[in-house]
Image (tube, rainbow, N blue to C red; front, side, top):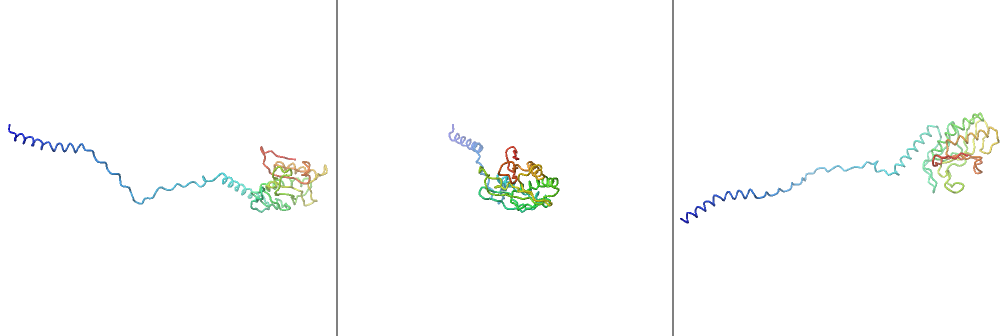
Length: 247
């Protein structure tokens, strides 16, 4: 066998096989991973900032203050519509004593004067107007055939404890008044006191004292104790179960 012929045959066969091997190797080579996408550096607006609802940020104290303010405004509006004469005053703060919604009351419906002009919480002024209009005026007409012209006040706001010293007086909160008596158009004044039995004065005083009980939460006067023998104490003290004192 010619060695040179064989060598030439092998070389030719290898040359023919080389393209096939190259193609297969390239086909099996793993594909290189693509680079990550290029960041977008254009100036685009970011997300809108989240705005909290202002109302949701209110604290319970804020809500209470807002409610109190609304109630006070409504009370003042009722006083004006009823025809009371008064001045709205700034809140009172004197040690432990305070009034959140004070008014200086000088006159009631039907031209009745409040003497002297007295500082008190707005609801007390409203209750006095109701008592005078619904009870005192008609009872004066029935017993005396005349109209009251003046409501005489002893104490309204006064920074002090109760007489026994147990707690603050309702006067210290502008929540109570002491009525000393009444003046009338066609008869002498009437001072609160132990009235003679079976007299028009006794009938008038007893009726207006008892009829104050559905309007005020505390009513004390002659016959209740020695401390209230010369005046009617009227206040709006809140008690559990809407408990009232009427003596």
